[in-house]
Length: 273
Image 1 (cartoon, rainbow, N blue to C red):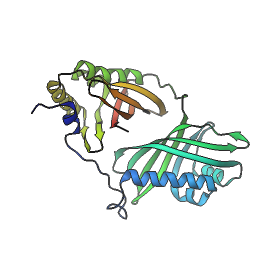
Image 2: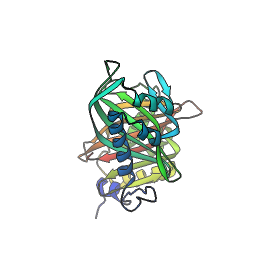
Image 3: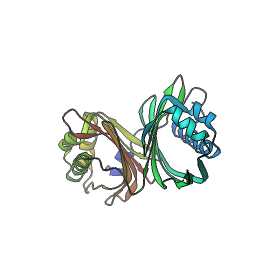
Image 4: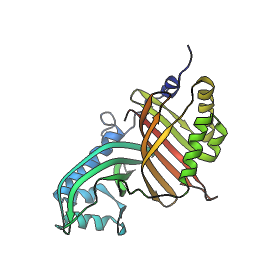
C-alpha cells in the first residue's frame, strides 16, 4: 500500500496530557487550563479578587497597554468597581505544552467591558501561560492582542518563509535555517498526530514524507496575531494545504538566537480546528 501524506502525518501518537494528581484520570491538560481560564473570566466579571489571589502565581506578569503589572496590581484591579463587564465570550482554545510543567493556552476572546467609562479593546487574541508548581497549575503570564493590530516582529517572517520553502521544494536542508536544534513539530488531528523532537528527527520525518508523497507539499499561512516576549515570540493563524485538502489552525513559537536570527522552536498544526 502506498503511503499518503495523511497516513504519514497521522501515524503514531495519540496525544493525551496528564494533569495534577487529583485529576489525572478524568481531565486532560487542555480541559484543566480551559476550565481555570473560564473561571477567571467569571471571576473578572464578578469582581472576585479572591479567585485571582489563588489563580495567579506569585511572580505573575500581566502585560497591558501601560506595560507589565504584577499579581498585586491584578488582584486590586479585579476588586475595583472601575471596570464593568456586561458580557464576554471565548473560543478557539489551543494548548502548547513546552515542558511537563509549562504550557501556554491561546484563544479568541470578546467582551463588552468598560473601565473608567472607556471601552476595553475587543475582540482580542489571548495568550495565557501556565506553570505547574507543587502539583497545581498557576497563571504566570497573561497578554491580549487586539485582532487586526498584531505586533510586527521583525525577523520571524524569514524563519516562516524558510519553513514553508522547505515543504514546497522538499528540501530538508532548509529546515536548518528555519528551526532551532531542539525544535518540536506536531501535525495533529482528532485521531492522533506525529510529534517530532529535535532538528534531526524533524528532518528525517520530512525526508521520509517527501520521498513517499509525489504531489506538492504546499502550505499557506494566514497569520492572525503575533506577540513578542523578550527573545521569544508566538504566532497564531490558519493554514491550508490545497493539494491534500487539509486546513486548520496553527501555533508557532519563535526563538531569537545569539546570532540575531529568529528560528522556530515549536510548530503545532491542528487539522480541522
